[in-house]
Amino acid sequence: EPEVTQTPSHQVTQMGQEVILRCVPISNHLYFYWYRQILGQKVEFLVSFYNNEISEKSEIFDDQFSVERPDGSNFTLKIRSTKLEDSAMYFCASSYSDTQYFGPGTRLTVL
Amino acid sequence: GNSVTQMEGPVTLSEEAFLTINCTYTATGYPSLFWYVQYPGEGLQLLLKATKADDKGSNKGFEATYRKETTSFHLEKGSVQVSDSAVYFCALRAQAAGNKLTFGGGTRVLVKP
Image (tube, rainbow over the protein chains, first blue to last red):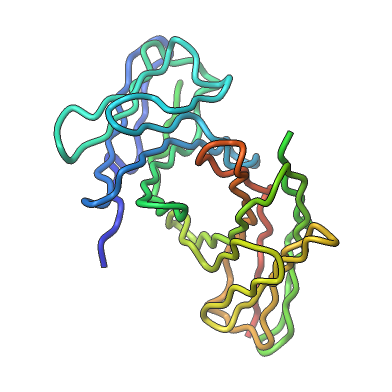
């Protein structure tokens, strides 16, 4: 069964550094998403992406964040200058219609 | 705005017990409703969904019925197994809110042998 994959599974970085989280969505899906879950809190929507552009973003997704689909398979989330409060589990998801399929997540730890 | 409220856990049960996890929502229009499950060390997996009032979603012995009159989507399983130990998330996708999912806080379930 096709699945969403994410790399790395765990990323440790210093405050102020740039990080890129990578995702490979399911191949025939058209919509791509990033969510995050700070430890002990709800899963929160960050951004959705369709037809090579952002279709929706939350107030969390400020200028420090960007997304890209650099080729036909990868979908990336970049955080330009990480803050301590960016420490969270980041989930990528993809969908063809209304059902979103999630990857296993990348745990980002900012020191 | 849209929101989902779930009962707080952890919920601890013995094997073969009946499980109910309450979920209520606030949304404009007619949202689609989902239950996702997160097993230890893994990502979110879709468990079941319902897209309109009175629909019943079911999978792996779990069921949930979309109740518009009570704005609820409670998850039930008649006889749990140790392997059902996980965190369960209720979520909605509102018509007027694009494709994004709004999640509840998650309910941790621990099933003891």
